[in-house]
Structure formats: structure tokens, C-alpha cells
Length: 196
Image (tube, rainbow, N blue to C red; front, side, top):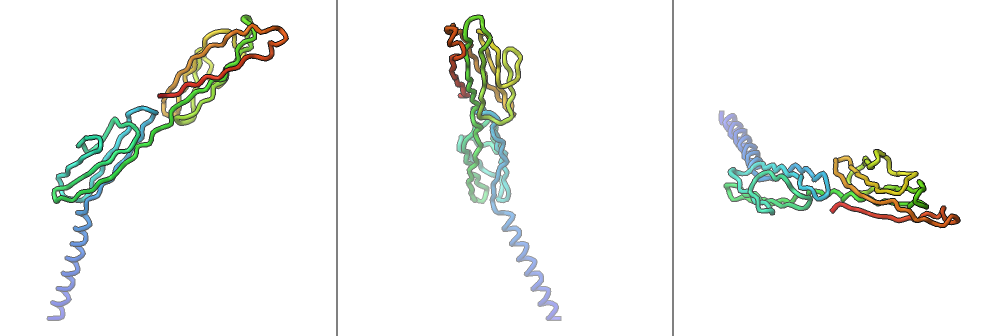
């Protein structure tokens, strides 16, 4: 009988010990976050969904941007830190980084026409930044990267990336009225525009 009582006491002690360990682990304050990065350069559509586990509520939350709300919205890309303290005085801090998309950039290579009546001008677009693939919309309805057989006039291009971020640029194809023997040597220039 004493042996059984001893075994029961040891078993009960072991169970209590396991329960205490489990309770201690469950009560440890821990914070994490689900991040949504900004879609476009310069946009404030980033989000941080803060996840608080363990500890003793209520929690006191302090963000580096001065907010005390648990979840953060309308954020620009960058670093954000948060400190959470619980009712027992436990405290934990963590830093989150929202990635900044690269700005869209358009470079146009322009070949002016040889004379005012010619249609030997061209414009070619080279795009970088944002998230590929890109879509192209010229003011004449063309959807490619290059316009050819152009005459004198104004031309505009709007580029959108895979996230819907857009950038527009305008340029002119001009007449050089070159001498006949030099008409094949068309004047070229490059112009660049970038998101700011």
C-alpha cells in the first residue's frame, strides 16, 4: 500500500511538474507580425498585423510612429519597431521592415526625322524598376516598346507594372532638316523620367 501511495505521489508530482512547465511556456510573452509591403514606390499602403501570444493581458502597445493600436495600416516602406508590455510587467520589443519597391523609370531613345515631311523618326522605351511584366500604352494606341515610321509631333507613353503602379512621359519628335547627303545620320537623344 505504501508503495502504491509513493508511486501515486510521484506520478502526481510529475504531472504537476509538466503542467507547470506548460503553463510557464504558455505565459511567456511573444510577438510576431504579418507584413504587407507597399505595392508602389512612395505609396503608403503597407500594413503590419501584430500577433501577441502569451503573457498576461491587457497589453500596452507602443509603436515607433507613436501609435498604440495593435495593427498598423497606411504605412510607407521602412522600419517600424513595437514594444509590448503585459499586466505582469513583462516587456518585449521587435522591429519589422516593410520593403520599398524600386521606383519605375522610363528612358526614351528618340531619333528625330530627317526633314519636316519625312516619317523616319522613332522612339524606343527602356523601363526599369517596379515589378515586371510591364504594359505600354502610347497616345497613338501602340502597345509595344518601340514606335517607328514617325513624323514630327508629340508622343506620350504610360507604363504600368504588375502591381498597377504607373508612370507617364511625354516627348517630341522634331525635324532636323538635314542636307540631302546627311539625311541618313538622324539626330538622336535620350530622356529619362523616374517616380519621385
